[in-house]
Length: 433
Image (cartoon, rainbow, N blue to C red; front, side, top):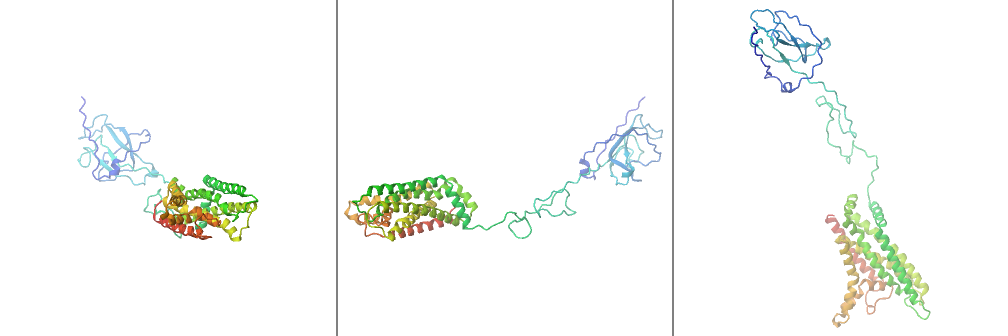
């Protein structure tokens, strides 16, 4: 008759065992060779007993072995009871420290004070697998990571603050030579921009065609032996007057177009000095407008002097009809640039400048019929842009001979432009882009 099986006691984790040992999964055991039943003496100490330390066992490796029931009095064993026994380690690893058993349960443990019984097992904490040393990461630049100390985890570079590349001393050294920027770099940038856009080419081309074409047609109309023209270069201002209608939009677009497209942010990022940017634009545009206008007016003056009949112009007349007119037109374009910098809107700035050029003359025409406004109308005509250009050619409009003469219109326009341009510099330094 088969006796009832004795209930096996489930192993419980030791209360004082580390959390890592309880949660660590057991590694898979290698294939176990067939083992013979061990010869254990009767007086072998119990597992987990305090008398002797346990023999060297491999962590987590167990072998199931059937043990026949020994004929001992007082210990009732059932046939077929399984015993769990740890496989011994190789001799080369027998000197390694052995893990302590977590618990030894069962009726035959030291806590119960009874003999060893089948089904008793000993659980040992598994050693964590040895991690392969990770390769040390080389720093991307010199001084990025210092050597690791003994207390720091291996395989991870020491974290340090990024070095200040602009500060002196050790750190990153750029192979690109660093040069201090100046006004020359801004001038080169603005020259590249103004000559590489189509609006500059088309506007200046139309202005040259107007000055030369209208001047040549006027000279052909007046070239008669029976007609004496005095001053000889007086009527060449007609083409220049129409040419100013081209230089004004170009002066506005030099700066307002960048505000319209948003490229002014890139310009200010490349050159944070806003005064330098505005100065470079003014210098480049003024130089280009002056050269083109002076060359065109010089050609027209040569055409008039060769085709018309009358007294030869004086040196002062030659100088005012070429260089003086070139300066006047360039300063007028510079005024348009300052207005564009203040308004930051192409259509609004162009409309404002056309009003400055044409509105005084139109108002004066309507005031001529009123006797009480005669003086006001003459003042508007005398200081208007068309009459100022005619004065440089010694050919002022009728009734304005008492107004500014000679070089005076140029100085008046230069004063007004200086005031407006100063306001543009002040607005650039105070307003955001």
